[in-house]
Amino acid sequence: MFGFLFDVFKNSGSYPEKVSDMKKFLIVGLGNIGAEYANTRHNIGFKILDYLAKNESSTFETQKLGDVCSFKFKGRQFILLKPSTYMNLSGKAVIYWMNKENVPLENVLVVTDDINLSFGTIRIKTKGSDGGHNGLKDVQDKLQTPNYNRFRFGISNDFSKGRQVDYVLGEWTEEENAKLSERLEKSAEAIKSFGTSGVSNTMNTYNGS
Image (cartoon, rainbow, N blue to C red; front, side, top):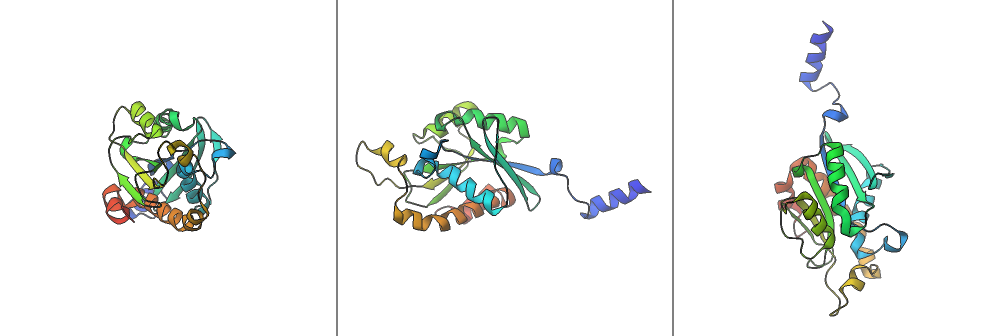
């Protein structure tokens, strides 16, 4: 009798889904640890995840190879990871947490900065080159494939020749800071869409926005 009732609840959708049964998504924000990097353009991956975690009332905890938190949304579990390996070794943390949480590659999204996009522009892709980005280069090396989802946030290329490193490791201007809040909100929406609506729908909705 009790077994019958369990099946009825489960099949009707009224029985609460266990976290372990939920579809998991690993969202990796790339950046460098340390207060000196906190508000730099290169750390936009961290900043987007910080914004998303705060909005979902989730708190990061320092664990192996990174700061991690998670939240549930529309029957999905989102695991947010900020690697503590520094940008150039980000792939090690990605592989570790994929394996630990048993997240398939198609459910991984890597969030990073892009100097080839104008400030605040979002571009989500399912594959591509590392574009000279050392964080993406290491992720691709560790995954052994360029076919993984990446979320690029435009930081523009407003720097003179030979000044790229100073620019990406520099802090946002006052004008950029004034616009960041709206861009962070849009980025958080896109990440949740990735988990609930799929990567194709998310690209169609948010790319170029």
